[in-house]
Image (tube, rainbow, N blue to C red; front, side):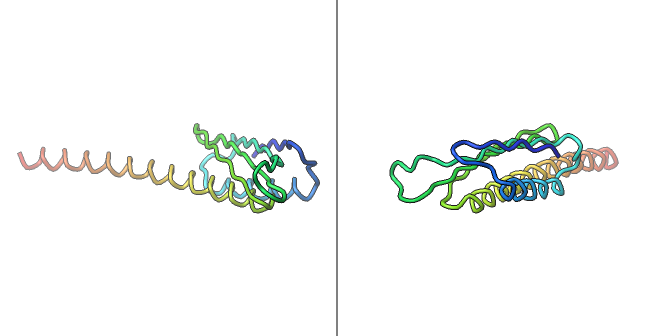
Length: 121
């Protein structure tokens, strides 16, 4: 898995880089082909215009299995924002896999019904 990590308004430390890579590498277990995985992650510190304290934003785009998954989260803790983005991408991937499985089952059901009609006639 190839992960591009960039930052806006903050410095990427080694700990942040390792944590981000660990979280996004874990997503590969939900995907079929792990050879062609690309993730682009943008970590940033927002201007807290109407908020007090630090506000961190994480945007991520994952390209896998011919699909593109995109999400962004904002939190008061950078690590919490990374966790939220990872959880959202995980949810999106599993939903897509379930859709694909349902379509296959639906197609199989249609074929079965066609064969049953042929044998009855």
